[in-house]
Length: 507
Image 1: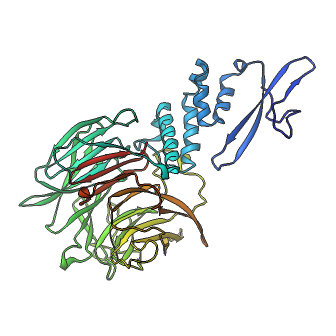
Image 2: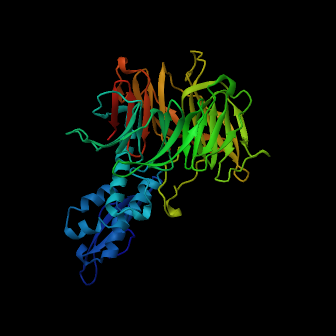
Image 3: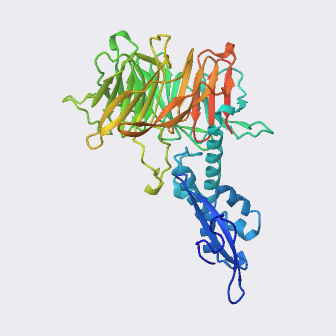
């Protein structure tokens, strides 16, 4: 092997050069262009003596690492030796970090520790992430593949478990787990009914734990008692009851955070704005302080290790609860908010929040997303309660929550207008990466993150594009109450309505 400097005769035009040394050894100079994660291109001139067979495996692996992914797949077909070397874990762990993690693409598949993923899994995740990114960039010409779950009746809800291939349909008296394969243009996705859990009482709703892939909480209504059951969904689709916790007649399940469930009692006239957090293992409950004139609870998320709650007129930030319930009042029964911001307009459902940062896999710190030039911020998308019917984005409120003091965890709230015109939005679902879907008058469309420049620096926020062709059309007769779920890593959408459940794949 020679050097990586440009040979004589290859200056200027960048043509291939061939030199003959005094001992008449022939050198073939080959250019290799490598695209880095930041979009820059580096040109390597590689001097190959005689044959590639003279290079040891370590040198070949180093050369493979600087090749684009498509070239790695192409040289795999040339010989058995290169086929073997292009399948080792070192190659695909490097490609995964460069092409997916550093580019902040959402990661396909289940949330498994990085060190436990074999080379084949890393290769599959890398290729699917790149394929989905290519599709997303061409969303104006987007097409979708639809699969219907074989249900005799409709479903109240549909939940996509992380990884995208397992789904739960929520019915009035049971929960069914499904395995939906990946479709192709030549055949539909395979659908397998894995297991059905029969509830002892009527099911009102179910919520998924975004941090624990296998955990869901179910609200059940009994004539004598109402309770919450926390279920674990096993890899074969069966269910295990982890625990139960009783709730009052007026409380509603709205979320689950590890060992805590969020209960909303704000819909009753005497308890306006009342939301509590309950440790379902210890049966200990603490009340969230409601901002004055905050209105009813809408949704929540976790941002910068803080609990962010969206009310109808306020966004409030709370410290994360722990098993010891570090309340902020002397009686130990209330958790006070650290900050609260009043919105310019009163908002209502649908609403969703995202930090535009993909969910990372468990593992070493080098898996954290590179290129941290963008300021960490939270996009809050919600429908306005009162529509003025004028101006761009008159139906939506987009608020941006961003830190101003990382040491003391202080935040500021800004409003960024949306240049999108909607008629009747019945659903919004945003993934951690900022990619998401929204349904406007029966048209299911994509939304995507974009970078804006402010006086504080660069921020990644969610943007809607109403000029792109919708993914699909939900018939007018089916545009009743709708439940949306979206897996941004797999590019899979689940839509539940009175007529059934539809699984939509972007690739």
